[in-house]
Length: 491
Ligand SMILES: [Zn+2]
Image (tube, rainbow, N blue to C red; front, side):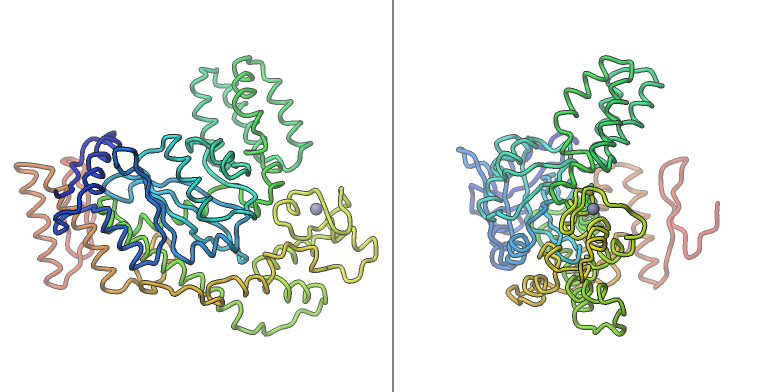
């Protein structure tokens, strides 16, 4: 049978999934002309991209989800496992399967995708399967903490299975609080006040500051607000308050912005009407370009000799031991030595936000060492090993050569100009996604609107055939579009 999805209303996610995937998974017939053939997709993942693929299905053999990793992803997690970013992103395929992306941070502060999953639903059972599969495939001894959204289902299961805390992205904490606040029907003054204090709580840099803000929050004359806070936020303050989050060594990440950035790059190339096969191929096109980008930065860092040697022997030692990304932080801390005083720091440890979070020497440690007349001020043992150049050289794919990169090397540096350096095949695929979407949109209309749209498309084709360019102005009155050749004049 041909597996074909009937695009239905926005809420039709789960219902359509089951039918489509049931067919795709159970039957092996008529591969030609079929879209979203799961077996074919798995074959592509394994044979073309060298992935390991794990599929989840229920007792009726209905597809529930799949998790895949290529060799580089597996190695990147094994080498840089401390903080794992996890989030679901939508609108990357016509089946509306949310794509879960797993991400880590390397020694140069760069993001690396370490796993991908497509899920039919986000039930407790399915998410449990996903996290357990990730764990089984990736021994996670070095994992310290996970960063996810407040909205993500079954956060507790992530913590239970991986045995590490699951932090809440700062922006999602603020967003969730604001949304839930509006359900409490408070007066506007109380609401505004609560919002400001909650924001201060989120950003609290120390336990003392947090305690002060919390006392202020609890002093707001509104029992249901206090009740809401005590029930929903107080017990999990370690997951959303800046200074408590830092204690897990989150490398100064208080948000899931790294994932948002990858997601927007994926969305700039992968159409929401992609089949699963198109999703997989386009995903690896984006991934290989992101990897090429990062490898280039790494090559620049290690292959270019530094022209000037710093005169300060401490800075010299910092720069020679650490990657430039981490060295920049430490040099800044060293230079701030005169702007601080000794706070709970010794010559080799501190309780401040920076030290907890980065596991690199802070200004307070440098000051303590200076007072204790330690010579030299900087010592390698103050730094977590993962930030050293030596560690990076031994574990980055560019040097280890354990991974053969697949696909083409292109460069995507910003979401606004992602298509600039794609090769012709990739440009064709990208354009094809848009055209398919156009065809679909046009076909959903009828009568005069359909005729109008087709004539507009033909006009467009004509212009390009003649080697001319055009700009589009939206007609607000009739919601149709008007194609204007070359430079548009305001109408
Ligand atoms: Zn410190």
